Image 1: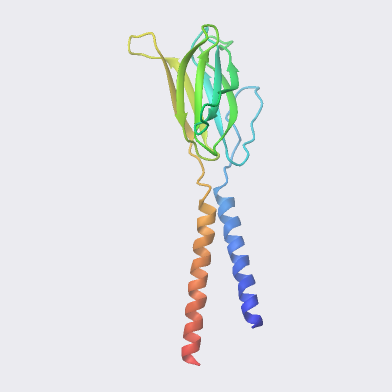
Image 2: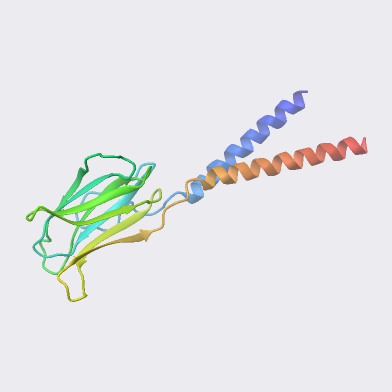
Length: 186
């Protein structure tokens, strides 16, 4: 009977090792944010994504509001104020961490005219890197376009658990098969 306890501990150790190995291989590497000049760096925590907002409109300041998409009748919260670029021809860029536990609503309002410029609903993945580009449309109309671009694909946070489950399942099958063979031989 003491052999069964040892097998259980060995199986648990192998599952833990497989989970840690797969989590290590899948963790994001490199710098936490791209080069944003002398701005602060943002370290992403679990269930967060990096959002870079590029204001390419000269002479326009924005306030970005944010909330979860499942929050019914909730007021949007101020995420960040984005001013116009100080250097002509270069967009102003603001970086922030946003939660990925639920889908998000982003709303940009023009600060001077106090009107909504655009509203986006999106679902992002953990440790992803996204850019929201605010620029003029090129269709002849004096409109503003907001495009959400994926800079770096998010990590599949369920993959380490799936790999550990599959390794455990394979080990259980192998041990059961070996027990069956040993029982038939002896």
